[in-house]
Amino acid sequence: MKELNCERLLCPMPVIKTQNALRSMQSGEKLKVVCTDPGTMHDIPAWCKVNGYLLVDSEQVGDKYEFVIEVK
Image 1 (tube, rainbow, N blue to C red):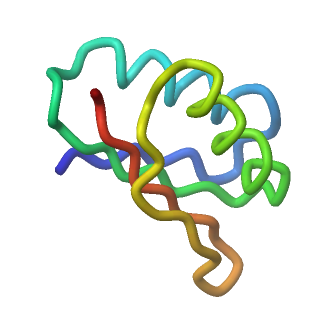
Image 2 (cartoon, rainbow, N blue to C red):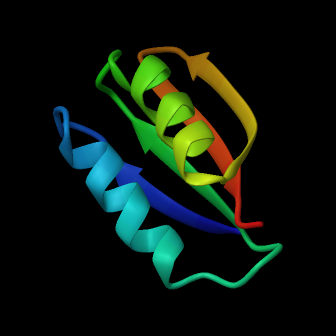
Image 3 (cartoon, rainbow, N blue to C red):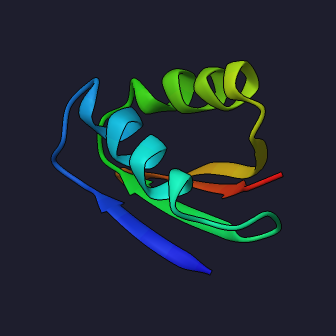
């Protein structure tokens, strides 16, 4: 699983960096995204739904927000 660190980035940068990372990945691969912007708890799931990516998991861990996204 690839990991993308988006800590200390504010909207819209976590979504843009997630989008760019996923574009280079193959079907079935997973990307773990770690953010500190609380807005990503809404933005990343919404972006996944609109763009056809599978949000496998999302959770808050301390002061961070973690997402696992699978490429369809």
